[in-house]
Length: 451
Ligand code: PHE
View (spheres, rainbow, N blue to C red):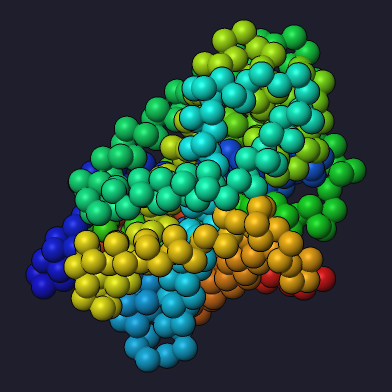
């Protein structure tokens, strides 16, 4: 009784669909739309896609269920959750690490989110669809991200939008926003896919994307795929744990996990079907790298009928996806201050977001006034991204798997998953994955960062 009233006072998701959409909103973001295509492009196409799908199932799926389960069991933020399951042990540090990772990731995520907002505006003003070559578009992108005031303005705007949504709390803000935004995203992507596929020469791109060439797969490729699965599914920092903490006990955790993983993976795959046919149809290179979306696509749009409309739609979609991920990152930090420090939601949101924004400013300036400030050949932006994505997330994910598999125990977790007589059909497989396969696989990713 006491626990359920505590749950209600924190706020709960209204419906399971709301929860699945909100969790999918967290997962689907710049990772799927900006990062996934360029990583696929750089790592040989079809075969990499297959490895990525395998990593998602063998590592992502079990860890996501583990995070949802801890979250719902404790109804707490990452720090409070580990504290309540194993009080005053070193395991609580996983929770702190998650809050710190959320803080770090949002600080630079907000910058890239700002770039996407800027490209929405620049689509309206026609500035970014009048390029004759991708070189020209790349040059334009380079000069945009070095413009101090413009970058700062859009970074602030992105953070402001996230603050506005998170301030409204669980049902009013996050759930309502995702219920509208997520389906819109799918519809827009499908329209764009048809647009892309009907371009002359598109089939070459489809072949690159779907026909696996296994000679292109090596140990490094597998590690990159695993790391991408992690980032894309929002795992390893207690983000899904926090979302699970707002879930009612009547919902089926195992099936919700499958929905979210399938949805996130489908979006990434769909994005590939938008990008590669278009890239090949335009005779461009898939190996362009991180600038693929921002410098190659506007060239593609410049050459298309209705290019301006397509450009507006595409960057709006990218911004929407970034916002729904941004709010989940902010919510992790906010939930910690609400639960552990007893702050009001308003105070927690305003203070943490202002601090994260301020910490993100040097990241925003890393391609302009601070581009010469480098340590080990990396600028501030690269360092924050590197520490959070390549160290904190894999470490957090691996420790969460070990915690659930060996410390808290799969038995306790399964009890929570099977509450109200729900069937957990892949119980045995999950136990095997979370205890052995997942920790070892993530350990390999983590090691790869050192070599
Ligand atoms: N999954 C998000 C994306 O693909 C990024 C993210 C990582 C969000 C970790 C929350 C936590 O863009």
